Length: 210
Image 1 (cartoon, one colour):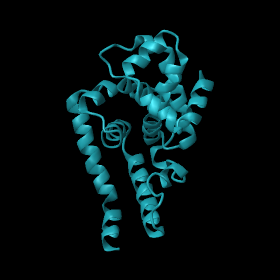
Image 2 (image 1 turned 135 degrees about the horizontal axis):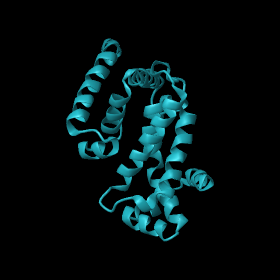
Image 3 (image 1 turned 180 degrees about the horizontal axis):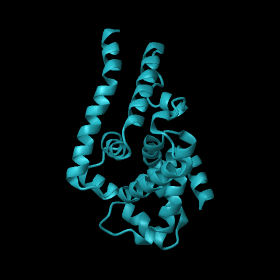
Image 4 (image 1 turned 90 degrees about the horizontal axis):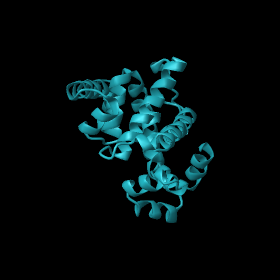
């Protein structure tokens, strides 16, 4: 199964494969996987690997670890696809698995949130391709500032903030993924946004002066 995931990830950038993915509904792919079609799961992987990887990276802060946990997420998804309820969105279900996998890893390793790795190439290459040198430097520093600020949030707030702001999930989807009440997730999101604004304000003020 892990070999399938790795091979699929290598092919994820191929245009013709991506086009084929878009032609298949999640419901159709799920039905095909349940019928024993591994190629359908490859398509599921290609469709959701990038957002799942991004989400896990927001939680753990390390590229290599995020890739490992992303693969573990899809391994678990493959093994437990029969348990997916028809009314549950596939993406929501996968984010839920990813959340559990990331939390287990964080608790096992007992990493300190304030010591997240900042030199990951993914952080500095997210949006800086093709920009002038000055803009690339500003983008690099901004992403580092965001990563530092994100790492200071407690686990629940970081989880909700990443899902809402970075992954653009609805409140209803976040409630399903996290198991939080609507009141809690809205409170956590409000406090997370306030904390992020406070932490990033010095950087933004410097940017305004340039």
